[in-house]
Image (cartoon, rainbow, N blue to C red):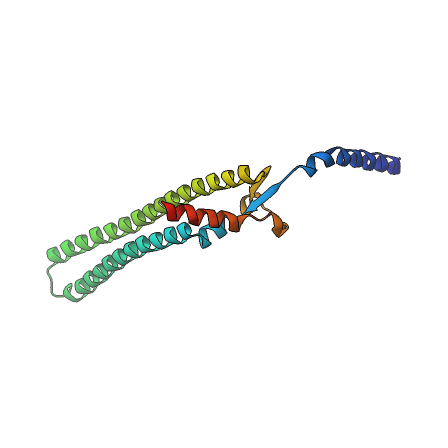
Length: 176
């Protein structure tokens, strides 16, 4: 009984595979690696450079504020013994306000950087998508898949069109 059921399932699976063979012969599939495009294309390198520059500016500002905060704390510790209670409380309050401002600044910069990152990524995604579509139509691809999003573990290098997309992306960036 089990053997017969197994044979029937095997025959049905074989029949389905035969039916799909003519359709598979006409498929032309391309695969792109978006991460490689971001890393190796001129626009990707430029975007990374600009983001790093903005991140450095933000980081420098945060470090400067942190240094001010540390200096104020040291000054407070030194002068707290000499100051009166009222003056000491006023300086403590000033320090707390400055510490809260520092935390807010740090959080705002993190949020702002994520927003900047998302803007660059969205812009580049749209541009690469348009290029992939253009290449797909021009070269007769049935399907172009992004390697990382699709979770592809292995593919033959002959279907990898990443370098072609990078070349086209670099050319369009130069002409703009």
